Image 1 (spheres, rainbow, N blue to C red):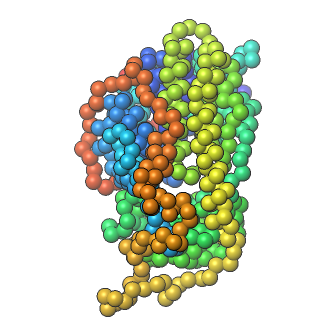
Image 2 (cartoon, helix red, strand yellow; image 1 turned 90 degrees about the vertical axis):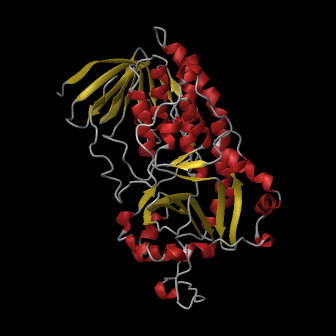
Image 3 (tube, one colour; image 1 turned 30 degrees about the vertical axis):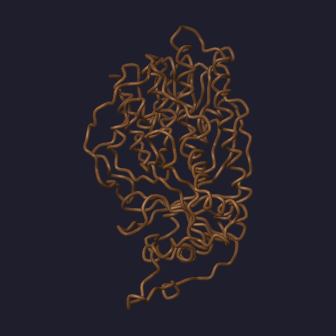
Length: 480
């Protein structure tokens, strides 16, 4: 029988070191609440996480005294939202109309954001981060959750941490949620996403590129020296698409974006293409006695709008503000306090998901109806549109795809935002700020903290996402 170490105790146990878990841990530690964050992995270096940091999160970082540190991170920014249609390009959002100092969305590898939060939290005496800690079960006493059991992935040892309150921030596949016996309500989605990378050239568009065509949708995220690409496919059509082989997939990409024809060969096989099983779901109740769930553990979001990280962070701020007073006194946290967190965050979550469901039903579903299941003509280099105006053939480049679409060919909503540019501030505010932005409580705010290292002009990221650090931390990050 494996020996269990059960002599660890904390006031708040946070499971999951993603944006929600790290923000919650940082804020509670600044309230003087002993908090331990359990992170499953040895580091934060994982590909194909959401990388958008929205304006409301940027404001929060300012309030926490971390704005200058974040600004020093390698990043790209965009302040307008454009969509490339077959007819041409349409601007549908203008973030320069946002209130406040941040009139943009930053594109930053999520591991850099998490490292920043972990470093700031490690400066608080009440904070502990345990890495390589895979939670396997919850601890219960008299019908109440009193902590969790985890396995140390470095040596296989089993540990128990007892806590006044446990908070699950471990994502849409939450092990804590499963251990608690909670099942979310699912909403049907019409799509899955294939993630992959392509090299980025200096003369490529900057920021975010969205490409919509009949049967195909692709979003390209500027990561400096490469594109992180999301190719949307009809739900459960991954196997059919892969049956065409990697050449068929390259042909699809080239037909959709001819200017990437010179680099799709970097996809050697489907091993370079990862499937994201898209879900849209929400728990009816985000808590049980002694346990609270926030972020994707409580409500998995669609990739539409890239708002999942923003909502998770807002959950964490609201939870910290509501929970801190109850955690600063001895005794269990009343269920009524946990209910207040859900009541605070339920309606912005439900409203955002309702908008995503409309986008699924009215836009993406019909757009993908003729997706990978349909036969697709094979296109080869000789078939790529070329421009001979300069005297030599060349593939159509990114600048050739951005002519404005004729208004008469556009759907009514797009014609309206073009005719009345003030309307472009609405989608910008919905996505970049959200329906209920949360602000750091007074006790968590700090003066602007000094920048540890100078800004870097372009991201220093290898093709595999590994090797960015000289060392990788394991085990615990001790309290300061």
